[in-house]
Length: 473
Length: 87
Image 1 (cartoon, rainbow over the protein chains, first blue to last red):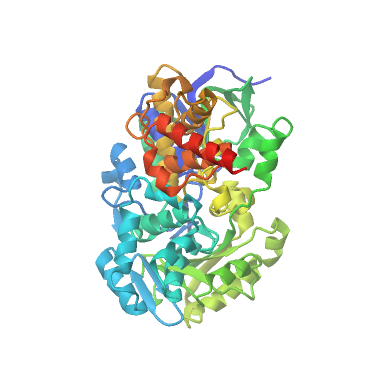
Image 2 (cartoon, one colour):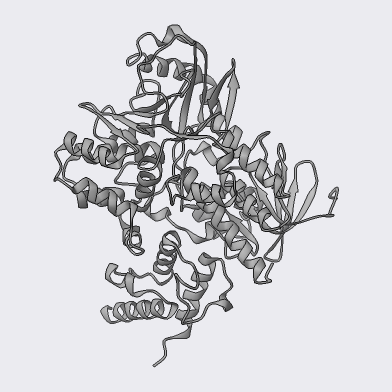
């Protein structure tokens, strides 16, 4: 028996990641009765922060993009009237790539970035600008033509220099965990435009400020946020969602359910489709999740000067062969920690660094976490020789940690791999076989990162509001 | 001559799912951008889903022609005719 059947919501959202929160805000703003159930004790998913020894660390997401004049994050913050409630700084340069031969900086002034790239790689004059202009101002149909291209195909159309192509691929590898020959051109282009050419934004106080302000706004609009609330099941009658059952035993009836969890959890655990829709679940089970990551957190004493640029994402590219880098990342161990990203916090009190790695299993990480951490610190000491003397706190998130806090399938950093065969699958956003169910996280195969899931949260809410306005909810 | 209704119905069903509207709200003349607010991400979803459903490959030069449901049906139909005559 369920404890209560009297809580009827227009929409229940499972998961308070950025996608779920944005969706919830728009729905509550439109006057709908909305509940967000989050299993963790705080909202944010991969966009959370934590404090140790008085220092604030960002758990995974460490800056965001999509905040230019017509960027999706700026639009959403404007619609929800929260822009003025956050102090957001754009660190400039947002990204710095240290190649075997030179250092390339991505500035907020795109012309300066173009000049730097053209000087460093002697490409045809004007070619980099042409490429960036195409990506930033695409014609409606140009992205459709790219649906069958890999990012490598796209780069090959513009550039001849292998080094330049590698530099323009490394941040895509860093933010999508795929090499240019595997990642879809569409997703690669999105990462380059939304994370790099319009990246480097950071809320004063840490990344947790983003979900916190969205959660506060959601509640101001009348929404109910329940943290530490694990959803056990989505109830379906016929082919229509009825509500959700949470671990505490409560049942919340709903006209619509939005899952901000991964698709495996949604379809297998929450809906138990394994026995009734074997074909669909079988296909999903054969899909490839993106790699996970190992994230190192170092708290520093106030005396350390890294000599690096605080607030900028520093990408260490050990060789130009990103294809091999991916193959090595798939069998990462502490002896092949080659490429990584590092960011010194704006207050210089911490360093967050990460590298991609497969999930393996929990016992592997219990056994190897400390060794990995020490190997990573040793790697960092090559560029910051005296860092070890200034560390006052150290810890790391392994793929098992990422899974434990967010429940992302196999601790995947970016949902399903953004390969061509896994791009834009409509049943992952609005399954045709269940009425009233929507999904809106990075697992739905159309968007990555904070700009990607912000769009998905916004668009999902728009679809539900439109349904309500037409009297169909 | 009218186009086969079942092809159009399948296309409407795909577009309805992606656009988040009901099938009976879409007709042959519905404009993808103006009426159904299809953005670049949804346009990719629709084209990929149509290609999978009919096992065809829409040529790049045909993409700009698709601005209404009817035009999508015409493009699919001509590709299906072509692949039938290729056999």
